[in-house]
Length: 152
Image (cartoon, rainbow, N blue to C red; front, side, top):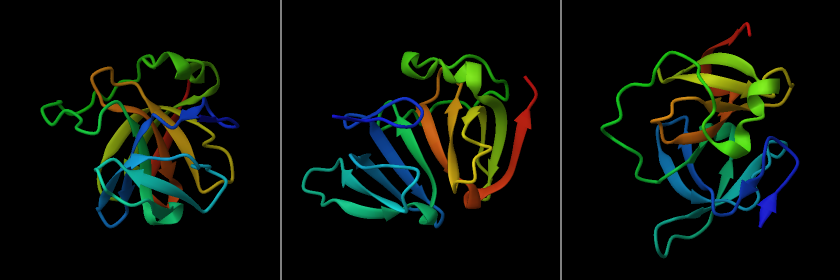
């Protein structure tokens, strides 16, 4: 099963980590994430966990990740924007804009932004750190402290 209609496809098998503005985190899978809607359903990856409704505006971001465990030993991300490693998202380098983001909680990210200019409450960022765990991130605008688009 997949969802079409915005940058790339979201597959049910994709792992997502919802980071809330209050610092809490929920990991799982989603079948109904749509940046044009106010909420989506997250099915926790822990055995026996019940699906929860997630209000997008309560989030900092939705991280589409390689693994739920990540790599705690990963060094801080590079401040350079290179190529997108994930083959299904590589086309973003042609149409997306290089961007630097700083969240209200102090986290910083670099990559290609897609949909930044839209009036929606968020946009996708495609990080370019090949050692990082993030494939793409749906960023909620109200969770940002600073966002800078970098000339091509």
